[in-house]
Image (cartoon, rainbow, N blue to C red):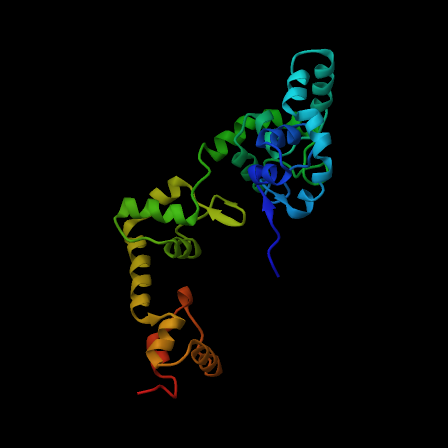
Length: 265
């Protein structure tokens, strides 16, 4: 089954035939719902509710109408007053509390910000007002850097240790305990700069060395098939029949592959 599309602000704007600024303005004014995929993108289901409303959206946030609404006149003032009473999505909450967007998400993960109380996606003004006194504590607790994903974490470790660190090594260090994530982004762990810089070089070297030794004594499925003189299909079926399963990195132990019955030559 094909994965359902998700639209970032620019993709949604292009899909609707409007400008990205119109999408931003419309979201701020509650004319389109907050992003429902990772708090940053709109699902295809939500996006499909919008094409029939483009004319309505532009009547409010189109450049000419937007300028009129922002000129300080009575109509503009009235519209701004209505917006001030609306519930706030993640981006608006971050702006209101003078936080970065990732700090709102991380604070929510840690329970420092309560779950959205409006439609499960937005925060009411009452809740937002109650959080103003917590903003400084959130900043002090989370710091000013969101952390690095495993790919960038591997690059940082490689630069510091002068070892050939890869993403898989970061995963192992996290699984074994020396490295603990400070949060997550779209389901993937994020690691603080402090925790990465505090890792002992010898511990990192041990993990890197173990991976490299495994690669030397293992083969991919394609390499295994070539080694045996088989098609990929024959190897996979034969391996399964004999209980041979891939190990780390999806690779097979070379000795076990060579031990499969029926090898040519």
